[in-house]
Length: 95
Image (cartoon, rainbow, N blue to C red; front, top):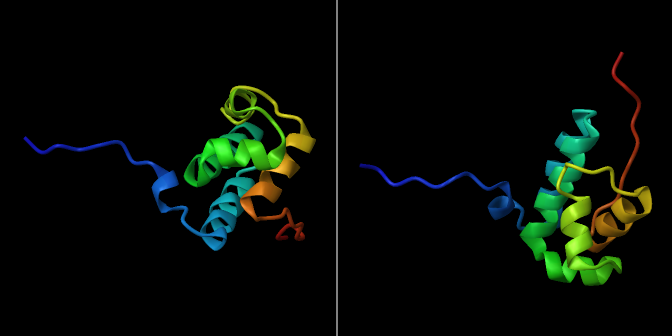
């Protein structure tokens, strides 16, 4: 019997460039819950405690906000992205 373990994207988010690429793909979905969950995965990759401290929110609230089950405040999202070392950027939709 082959032992397997669940795939965890957080294991591969080891640089700001990888986080930015991952979050860009999540944003392309247009699904706010998916995006929040993806930001949570990136935060786990860096260490939820460190991200929470850098973003100025409690670790528990950060887990809750980025679970994909709630709608986090935009301010929280922006502070977490800053703590992750990435920024939001807009680009025109493809025609």
